[in-house]
Length: 95
Image 1 (cartoon, one colour):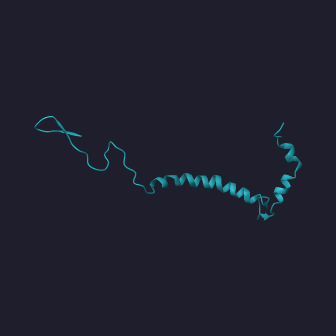
Image 2: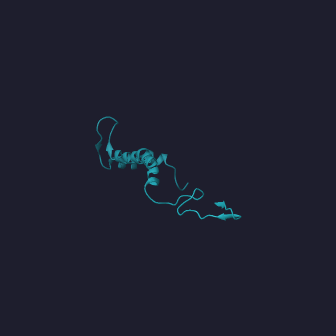
Image 3: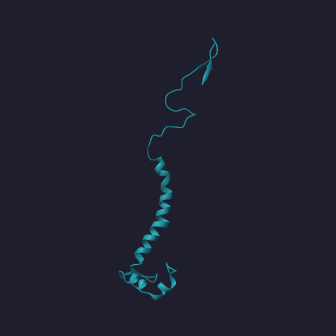
């Protein structure tokens, strides 16, 4: 910023302390930046994390989609791992 004086050429005027329009505002901390992430985090939790947790929970139950799920422990996983169709359908890693 310069001003012309009556005596002669332009004189430099010192800027006030703090920030000016030409420089970015200094970071002062606080929560506004974190608040901007809240909608994205909630979307991720409701549409990614919650369905995965529910799928793991339901893998330990017997449920036909109606009524209440009945816990069966590791029976579903045991049935899956001893099923012959699983080994036929999965590709062989060595061939």
